[in-house]
Image (tube, rainbow, N blue to C red; front, side, top):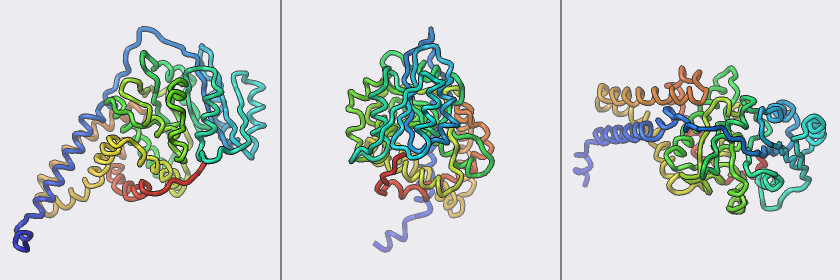
Length: 377
């Protein structure tokens, strides 16, 4: 046995592992992520204007609503629409602020909740109430700390509804600010969107983001709302979509005018807590989604360590050649996808961001096994 172990060429095995990991990465880019990079929205013979109910849940969000709610209320949209703000037990000036807004904007509908729902952590309860109060079949969701990127947000999002479509996935971007943290936050947001948009285009939708998401009211109640998710603090957006989305009922919107914009976290610690909270829901995804996402992340995580080992201990020429091939494919697809999602300024940093992902996985991977904290948002 000892002789057998000594006779194994471990460096060759590690090099083969590097080749396999690189192949997996390249296949993800060529088979999946190119779908976003080269995406063209389906041609439409005529525009459509469905009645829309916009729903925002707020808890102690007076400052955010002051900045962002006007952008929702002044949307250019010719059809019937309403803006529902569910004020969930706020202790700040939210209630009085909303009353002032209602004096000017008659489309604003305020729902004041003064109690918690026992056994239902997170914002699933106020969101459910908002959907129940909605007058229209098309529900469009965003957050109090988000503002539409244009006055045509509602128009662009609802246009994607066609025959059989019940879910529209939009892009929730972050404002561009100076500093490295801003670039890391925006790149991680882009990288996540690249995955969930690509999977949706491949017929495997697995999540959406509550900052910019639309679905039919009938779909919500046909699936008993969030009843299957009430034990999970989060999941009102990604887990609900993971449960009800199919290749036939889901569409995406990448139009820059259909984005929403949020103010990113100012400190690494706050961002760390936010991302840890989001990652705790991934364990509840469908097995196929967990496998495919895990395979991509694990191959991405192993790529650089195996590259270094292969270059030093096997052949640096071959190893760097494989690295160069993967980089060329990755750079082309990332650039085109960044243009699609209005994140082109990040491309100058793409190679550093790719290396950063190794550190990112080390930091956030433990969140997959943590028990979710029962925070409201």
